[in-house]
Image (cartoon, rainbow over all chains, first blue to last red; front, side):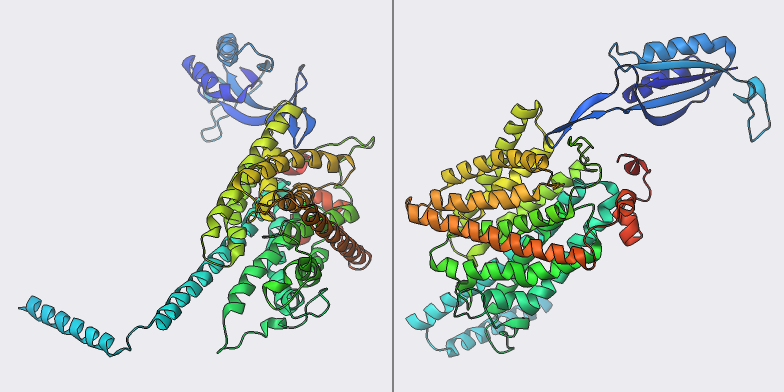
Length: 112
Length: 445
C-alpha cells in the first residue's frame, strides 16, 4: 500500500477528484491548508500598504492506494492538477504499513 | 335581499355624513390657510422623523464599516461599542447635551435650559420632540465616528465614559456655537454667518478630531509598525461587511443632509442630488487615485472615498450647485487617500480611516461650502468658514485629548498587551463573534 499526499491549487480539487475516481480510487481525504514553495507567496495591498502573503491557500489531498496503481494515481493527479503556472503544487509518495477499517476490522488491501 | 339592505344603509350613511359636513361652518380664506398650514406642519413632522430614522440607521453602517475593517477577534467589542455609544449617548444628550446645545444663551458660548427634555409638556407643542429626535441621532453620529479610530485596543469601560462625555458636553457645546438658533439658542459662530448646513464641521469634524485625539493618546495597535518603523497592515476580516456598511451610510445620508431642512419642501431635491453626486465623485476619484498610486483599484480606499464625498458635501449641500457638489466630492476622494497614507506614516493608527474621512474632509467640506457658495464668492465668507474649522479643531481636539488623558490616568484607556493579542471579544466580553469558525483569525498578528 502507498499513500499519496498532494498539495494542489484549491480550484483544481474537482478535476483531481474525478481523475482519481476514474482510475478506481475509493476514498479521498481533503484539507484546506496554507503554505509556500519556491515562489514564496505573493504581494497584496491593503489600504495603500503592500504586504507579503507568505502562506498561500492550498488544498491537501491524501489517498491510500494499492501499490499497483500508485503510479497511475500520481499520473492522474499530475495531469489533472496542472495549469503550467507557478504554484501548481507537489505530490509525495509514502509507504503505508497497515490499514484497518474500523467498522469491520478488515485490514490491508481490503480496508482501503 | 341582503344586498339591497346594504345599499340602503350605505345611502343613508352617505346622506348622514353629508349632513354632518353641511353642519360645519363654511370655509373661509383664513380657515383654508390654517388647514393648509396644518398639512405643511404635519409633513414637516413626518419628513423630520423619517430622516431621523435614516440617520439612526447610519449607526448600523458605522458598526459594519468598523467591524469589516478590523479583525474577527474584536468584532463583539465593536458591536458593543457602537451599541453603547448610541445608548449612553442618547441618555447623556437627553439629560445635558440638548440643553447645552439648544438652551437659551446670552453669551453665545453654550445654552442653558431644556435639560431632560423639560421643554415638553403634554399639552404643549410636540415639535421639541421631533426636533430632539433628529438632533440626538446627529449627536450619536459624532460619538460613533470615534469608535473606528480607537478600534481593537480600547478598554471598554474607558470607552463608555468617553461616550457619555462627547454626547453630553463636547459635541453639544460646539453645536451650540453653530446651530443654537435652530431652537432657543444663538451661537457666536453662526452670528458671523458660518455655513454648515448638515454638519461637516459640527458633526463630522467633531467626531474626526476627537478620533484623532483618541488614536494619539492610545498609540498604534500592536504589530501595526515593525521595529524599524515600517507599516505592517493589519487586515480587516470582512470587506463585504465594510462595503455593506458604506452602502448603509450612503443611504442614511439621504436623511442626514436633506433631513436637515426639518421642513418638507422642494429644497430637499437639490440636497438629495448634491449628496449623491458628491458621494459618487468621491468614490470614483478615490478609486482612480488608488489605482494610479498602488497599481490596483483598492477596495478599502474606494469605500472611504464614498464616505469622504458624503462628509465633504454635508456642509454645503443646500447652498452649492450640483456641479460644485461633484467637484467637492471629487476633491474629497483624492484627499482621503493621501490623508490615510499621511496618518499611517506619522504613526497615528486609525483602522477605518475615521480621522481622514470625517476630520479632514469635514474641514474640506466646510471650506468648500464657502468657496462654492451659490450666493457668490466672498473672501469674508471663506474667512468665517476657516474660523469655524479652526475653532472646531481647537475645541474638540483639546477637550477630547484632555478627556482621554484623564480616562487613561484613572480607569485606563487601553487594554493590556496580552488582552490585545488575545482579542477584546474574549477578554472584555467573555465572548466570541464567530464561535463556529476556525481560529485562523488569531494566527495573523
